[in-house]
Image (cartoon, rainbow, N blue to C red; front, side):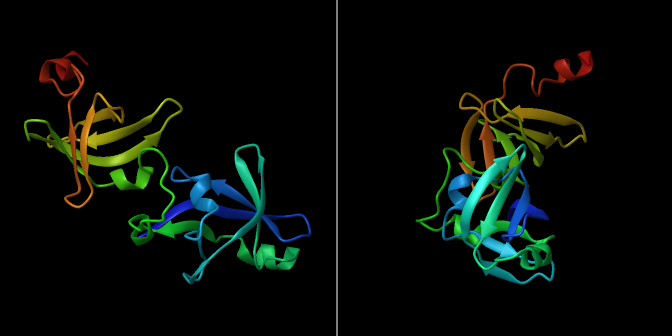
Length: 178
C-alpha cells in the first residue's frame, strides 16, 4: 500500500518548485528521509529527494531533485509524495512519536475484556489529538480519541486496537439519550 503525504497541485516559479497539498499522514521527518517516494500519475514510483522547502499557508513548496525548471515541475503536477507501507516497518524509518494515521485504518476495535466494539472507518486529525470514527456492529458510529487513557494496545499484525472506553462512549443508555 502507498501512503500519501502530499499531492503535487501546481508548479511554482521558474526553478522547478512545486506546491504540495498536505494529507493527514504528512510527517516532515519522513519527507526528509530516504523513504520518500514519488508516485506519478501514470502509477510509476521512484524514490524522491527534497532539496529545499518552505511553508506557504497550509501548503508546502518544495524543490525536488530532478525537477530543474518550470516544465519539469508542471509535468509532475498530479503526482503524490508518500511512502510504501512496507517501508514503515523498516528499522531506519523515521517514526514520529506515536503512529502515523494510516496505521489505524480498518482496525478492529475491542474493549479490554475482548468485546468487539466495531472497526475504524476514518481517522480525524484534529489539533488536540487524533480521533477514530468507529462503525459499530449495529451500524451506528462512535468517536474514539487516540489518547493514552483510552488506547491500551495497538497490534498492527492482528489489525486490532484495544481500548478502555471513556464513560458513555459505547454505553447503550448514552446512545438512547441522543
